[in-house]
Length: 283
Image 1 (cartoon, helix red, strand yellow):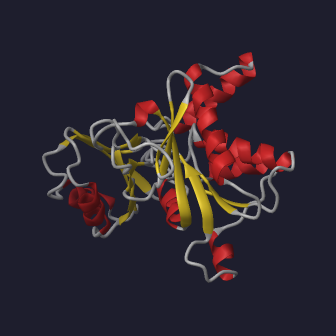
Image 2 (cartoon, rainbow, N blue to C red):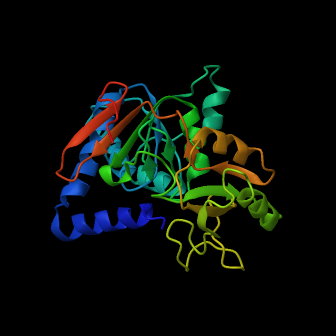
């Protein structure tokens, strides 16, 4: 289900074994590189996303720092996986807290680059397949620009049917929280299924960080509930607001009206930019 890290590993395996990428992985790399090349400049603070496409944006930042094209960059990673990748590339890292201490600006970050699991025709997103939705949202609301990079399989006219909606909840009283979520008017009777992620919140498999009950734990020590809808989410903004009103809900994977630009990697290896500075979404 949460295929982001699995795709990361498969991408690395392809590169290690053959030195080449499939057409779609090559397009993902182009999308990640395009986002960095067009939106990242020296003397910026950057938000670094999580997932198989965001991996390439991080890679590109590392390359441009190493060859001197970028200087005086600070980056805020959205997950421990991204932090590890950035450190391996000698990318200077900071935190939102450290930035706030030294700044009174509304936006602490110039640009955040991240992926998504589902994108609708108004550029609302579902994120959280990799389990990093809370940190991703914290970073992206602190950014003046949020550039989303995805492959074309993530594009749908509406949200809900294609990818489950993740909701991060606190462990204490989690059954009561789940009950409140599934009984929301926007949710009740509209689900094929719902379940807490088990094992690793990224892969849904055992052998990683988990509780004695076998439940996966996020970087923040919480659980993730995945809601699989059998219909379109009619009003993502309203659902987002009502989920946040539930005591016990930390955050959800609806990112509404946050991405100004979406760069799409196509199956033929090309990339197309939609939204601000690009085409009007046509899917």
